[in-house]
Length: 69
Image (tube, rainbow, N blue to C red; front, side, top):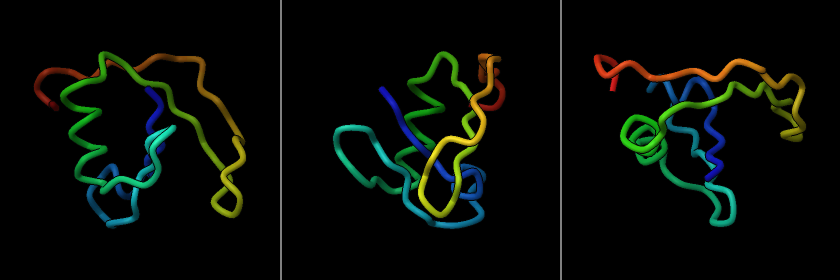
């Protein structure tokens, strides 16, 4: 599953929608729930805000500690 979430939405600072690949826009609250409850790990991908093109793809897989879920 690929979920693209603007970092400010992930942090709860804006309500910009996330995108669920193959489905479309989803509310940021749903994206946060998918990440916290369903993701064992994730990769950071920085994208151009104008066209969504990837600018940098992190090579490190991040695991979410239980305390932050």
